[in-house]
Amino acid sequence: MKSKAQSPKSKVPKPDSEINLSVKIGKLVMQNPVTVASGTFGYGAEYARLIDLNLLGAVTVKGIRLNPVRGNPTPRTAEAASGMLNAIGLQGPGVDGFIKKYWPFLKSLKVPTIINIWGTTVEEYAEVARRFDALGGVGALELNVSCPNIKEGGAQFGTDLKLLSQVVVACRKVTTLPLITKMSPNVVSIAPFAKAAEESGSDALAVTNSFPAMAIDIETRKPKLANITGGLTGPAIKPIAVKLVWEAAQAVKIPIIGMGGIQNADDAVEFLMAGATAVAVGTANFYEPQTPLQVIAGIRDFMERKKISDVREMVGSFQPRK
Image (cartoon, rainbow, N blue to C red; front, top):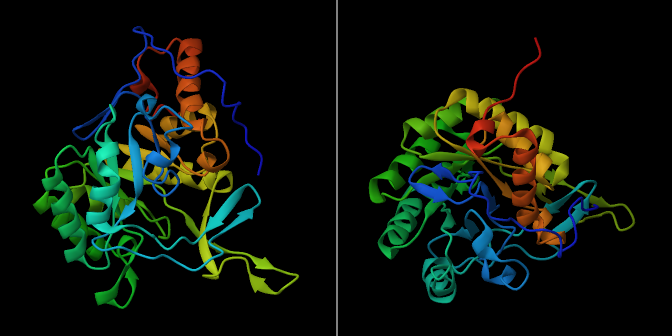
């Protein structure tokens, strides 16, 4: 998979009072519409020597549940045509471990932190949300609903309208932080799920998560991932992700953070025009950590070229052919 991004020394965002890049996701104010996708950027500190985190719109961290999680056995990643497969297994330090090890660094940043949270029961989601609400200084919570509910025989929260609503409602009751529901792509139509999240109290949506996939090593006849299946991300899924953002945007009034295969500013602008208010760079962080900054600079260049003064003018500006 080849990067379209420029070298690490390429231009980074420059201030310009005539162009407004700031956006709002609920009560969360981002200085520009670019964050990073959960699970692709660690907990921020891992990338601090590679990129100036304070130039981002927000830092979105890897998923946290109540207790520590070991994750899946290795190999956990495999390259695919125009993308990658991963089955990390949501490894993480748990709430206490995250607060002790990573929060001191994150709260020192000038930009907000979006914390991705998950659980295996509705009650666990709510407890994690409550803990982070009490922490103080958190920018927003991203609800990863692409997880199995152990009380419902493994049904994914994000593919069951009732369970999805229950999670959002439970978290809404215990926190005033902006809630961003990260939608599952594994549904026939995203519209009813987007509406359910909005009606249950979600302040925004994140569209989309990875797609279930697998790969086989034909020499060994073994799966390339120890978990057999994993999530497909990267440029291969971008056209599908853009479609899902557009469909979700037709169904709700709340902001959407679009993601899925963004490698450059052109990709990001496509998501904005489809209806996203902000975007997240994911897989590209693995091979070109400067990509988020290059996307910010490229959006500004596009706006200058098109004489657009406010990035919000591009949101949903897609025009179907007549």
